[in-house]
Image (cartoon, rainbow, N blue to C red):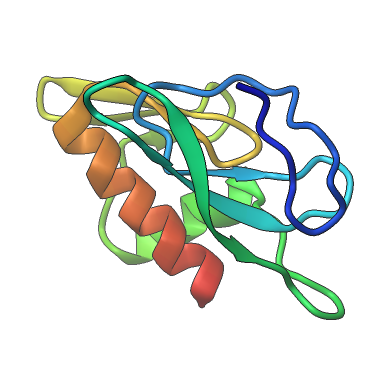
Length: 117
């Protein structure tokens, strides 16, 4: 299945992790949420958010400062690796998170909070 941006209809060519809940269009910058059918593993688009005017873009250095304000000091913005206890996830320059599920969901929520602030 090819994922397409609902705003500009451009195909998404970036990597999709099995746990990823959204993708950012490389052309117009809109964020599209995706859902997966657990039984078949099929992806489908469920909600599209399009920013009007200048939108906030994900910047990994600003995300690091956001985490520092929350008291999380184990994030390396150069490599994108965040360690909490024995778990480790990797945050890409686009804001996609890859790693074990419990921590991955938490970091995705932090990214959501960061992008909405």
